Image 1 (cartoon, rainbow, N blue to C red):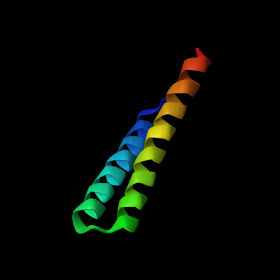
Image 2: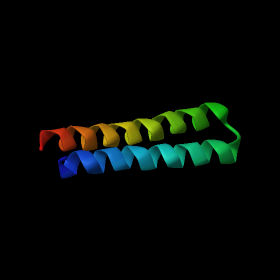
Image 3: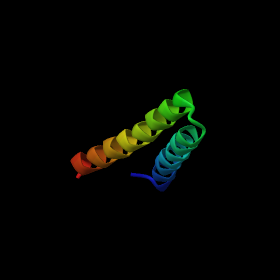
Image 4: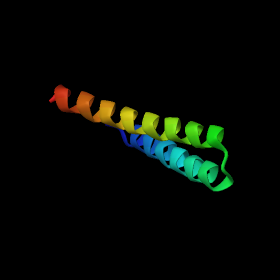
Length: 57
C-alpha cells in the first residue's frame, strides 16, 4: 500500500468523522449522514488496500 493512498484514505476518514460530529452538533441529519458515509468509505478503501497488499505477497 502506497503512502499516498494511505494518507488519502485516512484524510477522508478524518474528514468524514469531523463532518459527522459537526452534523451531530448542529442537529443537521443530512450533514451527519454524509459524514458517516465518507468515514465508512475511507475505512473500506483502507481495508481493500490492506487486503490487496496481503494477496500480492
